[in-house]
Image (cartoon, rainbow, N blue to C red; front, side):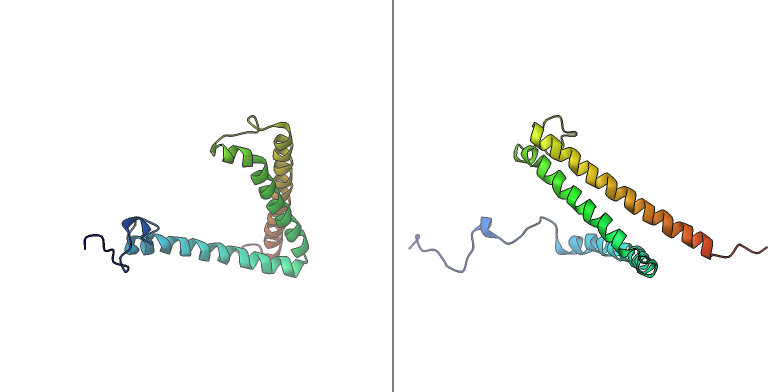
Length: 137
């Protein structure tokens, strides 16, 4: 009878624990993440409201789209390095010619996106300075 295996028991390797941390530590570490997300939304939502009032949502959407395309191209360009488990190699030096071109196109898209977003930030900042009245003494 030593060969009998109970069906309700799971082997040690089949546990559903995906982290070695206890639930209270996970909750403690999760609170700052929730706070950071809340702060980011508190910063981004008024900016989007301002962009809608000024009619700049399309410009923002194009900048965001170019940034996302740049990130996707960068991932595709670095995919051969990821397959070789070289996650922290910097620069396109270890890439072949095709992936090197893709790498530079990715950075081109990202730089254009960054310039467009910086232009929007400066436009919002300048309009806030113009709208606010000068300080009284």
